[in-house]
Length: 163
View 1 (cartoon, rainbow, N blue to C red):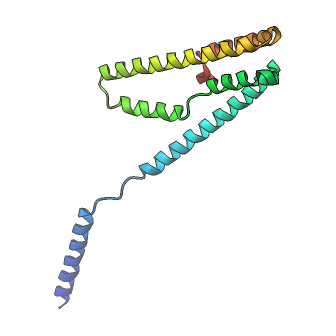
View 2: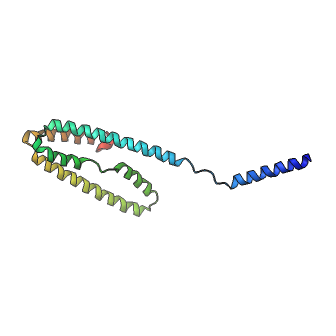
View 3: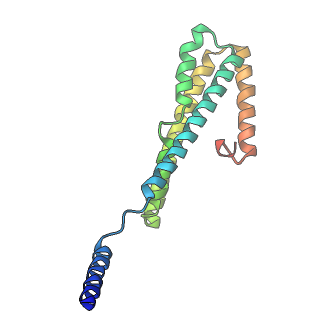
């Protein structure tokens, strides 16, 4: 009798192990990691937007923008904002590169360069339009502030990445 009980218990245990081996493991907690990265990315983007907003307010005070110049200022300020989701797009691009061949990556980098150049041209045109609306003392202040910004960027490797 004891032998039958032991054999039955062993059979049940073996069936349980077999069933457990066939059950797929739960998905890895990658989604939690992805959520964490997304949260960090959102926080960084929020911080950058707040920082840019403060700089723009400071610059507006330095230039002493008048009510008549407010429209030109707002148009320029909007043109200076990075496109929404730019950081997220860069992360997706890096992931996409992993699945591309070298010629495909080269073609994609050329497309990205063309997009960046178009964005720079759009910002340059907006800057010239605002500059034309400024008085000579405001233009002088704009020149001084923008020169400091350019020098600051070059010291850190050419742009906002090193700030």
